[in-house]
Image (tube, rainbow, N blue to C red; front, side, top):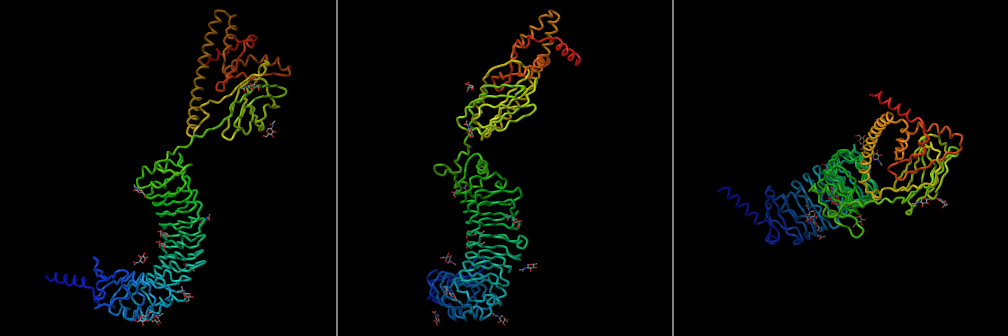
Length: 625
Ligand SMILES: *[C@@H]1O[C@H](CO)[C@@H](O)[C@H](O)[C@H]1NC(C)=O
Ligand SMILES: *[C@@H]1O[C@H](CO)[C@@H](O)[C@H](O)[C@H]1NC(C)=O
Ligand SMILES: *[C@@H]1O[C@H](CO)[C@@H](O)[C@H](O)[C@H]1NC(C)=O
Ligand SMILES: *[C@@H]1O[C@H](CO)[C@@H](O)[C@H](O)[C@H]1NC(C)=O
Ligand SMILES: *[C@@H]1O[C@H](CO)[C@@H](O)[C@H](O)[C@H]1NC(C)=O
Ligand SMILES: *[C@@H]1O[C@H](CO)[C@@H](O)[C@H](O)[C@H]1NC(C)=O
Ligand SMILES: *[C@@H]1O[C@H](CO)[C@@H](O)[C@H](O)[C@H]1NC(C)=O
Ligand SMILES: *[C@@H]1O[C@H](CO)[C@@H](O)[C@H](O)[C@H]1NC(C)=O
Ligand SMILES: *[C@@H]1O[C@H](CO)[C@@H](O)[C@H](O)[C@H]1NC(C)=O
Ligand SMILES: *[C@@H]1O[C@H](CO)[C@@H](O)[C@H](O)[C@H]1NC(C)=O
Ligand SMILES: *[C@@H]1O[C@H](CO)[C@@H](O)[C@H](O)[C@H]1NC(C)=O
């Protein structure tokens, strides 16, 4: 019952604000759940501070957004226990110097918006304001006021806000934690050695700032200045957590200068061209670099806690895949000319897996009009590699005395050939670069007799390097005329995408391994069979042996095989031919992939002593067993 009575009295007092009838309808009083009581007068209804009936201990008086112009000597006399007064968004043109004479013991917060004319703070200094903690003066003319003196005795003042007060420099104030000097006329280089905790210097004309011993500084707002560079010492400013450098003229930014405690960095609306995140503060959570000119980003492999990354409105075409993106909760790539091809496919995959990331507004560059990131196909246009259409070695002549003479023809309609080169092994020889319009060459290289040579023609063009090789043997006395070889690369290889090259290479490697192995087995089998047949024939008819081998040698042998078989028999021939000044040989190959050489009958018909050799093999085989 007693409790009810108290509640009734309370409610009654709320319903009827301690105001004279004149103002009752324009204001209301309330108690918040946290126990704070306030009187709030409706916006745009008052021309002066209302008159209070009795001095009920209210906490706040809110008179914001009215047309109050004159703060007379007795304006607050009837509510002298008030703790917080808000006169924001009025246009106060007169403040009596004795205004606060009765409020000194209670006043904790005072917010006043002036009319840009008031240029004295006498009303604050005339009587001590021992408990004032928050002071916000907006639109005063404090260009000539010595602020250090004004706030000297306000030992409890913590938060000072002086936006649009025509200040020309940053005052050096004790005890103040939070200083807002937004939209003043602070210019040139600012030397900040005084340790504020939160400092807002937005909308000034600061061209550079020197932060020295600001160990307390946690947030620094330099939005809308004219900074063209920014530097700081990560050790002296070790506690900085927020830096806002948006809307300046920074064309580069060195992330190495930042301290590891930094949480938020805003570099929006600058002129940054690239982003080097090689050294990124380990605790950085949010990085905004919207509306710059960034074309490329470099990342480091260092650990990073980044969760918000805004790169909207830049010039990014592609971004390399990096694990940093996997941890993001927010990523904005809106308004970038993204090239949505296979190089950026990882990002699409990431977006589909990371439901937190929203790419609905991202777009991809296209010839016609930008297309939505989410509907792009992320295909890489297949790269068509042009090639030399026909490469035709028409004549090869090898002369022991004079060297090597080669003639060829090239059909290169697309003009892709840069130059060609001819190589011989062994001993290795590489010709100088030959102009693509040249069609013959004489290499006065010392060509040896009775040796196997790899002759390669290397076509070098801007897309690749093609090498065509032939094996030939300088062990013949046959003089052959022009012999056509048309070399054409497999049509399938003409159009190759990036991925196929690797697969082809792999298949080729495996293929050649298997091929080599099969060839080896074949050789063994062949030898074994040869020996068996030879044995058999020796028994039957010794005279028929030679004709058998002659018959067999009509086949096309791989040159490696024929060489090993024929070599011993050619010694005689070659020694005979040393006095002949010229030995000509030619390429008789017709297929690029299988290099064969014909062994003519008449070569073998003149051979003697085959049986001896096969006897030797026979012996060696027996030996092995
Ligand atoms: C403010 O009010 C006082 C007292 O009512 C008056 O003397 C003074 O002229 C007024 N000042 C202005 C600028 O209106
Ligand atoms: C003051 O006016 C501005 C602009 O009209 C408004 O944004 C702000 O909220 C107002 N302040 C208060 C405390 O109502
Ligand atoms: C502010 O005060 C200074 C000197 O007191 C004066 O020169 C300047 O014109 C004033 N500014 C405005 C906007 O009245
Ligand atoms: C500060 O207080 C001291 C005494 O407590 C007084 O002498 C001095 O004038 C005051 N200064 C200002 C600027 O009010
Ligand atoms: C900064 O701090 C160092 C050491 O604490 C001191 O030697 C130096 O004078 C200080 N600089 C300024 C400008 O206060
Ligand atoms: C910095 O100033 C801008 C512009 O006034 C404001 O929007 C922003 O909230 C401020 N940031 C901080 C950390 O004070
Ligand atoms: C920095 O300033 C911009 C522009 O005024 C504002 O939008 C942003 O919220 C601020 N960021 C931080 C971290 O204070
Ligand atoms: C960036 O800052 C670090 C540390 O201050 C310095 O060593 C480095 O040379 C700077 N890099 C550039 C490109 O200025
Ligand atoms: C993504 O952003 C768009 C536009 O901002 C919004 O309409 C949509 O609901 C968002 N989607 C998700 C999944 O958050
Ligand atoms: C190859 O070159 C020879 C001699 O220049 C020429 O007769 C022949 O027609 C050429 N073959 C091709 C396919 O170009
Ligand atoms: C061959 O090409 C070179 C330049 O590549 C040029 O100087 C030369 O005149 C050309 N020769 C012929 C015969 O076209």
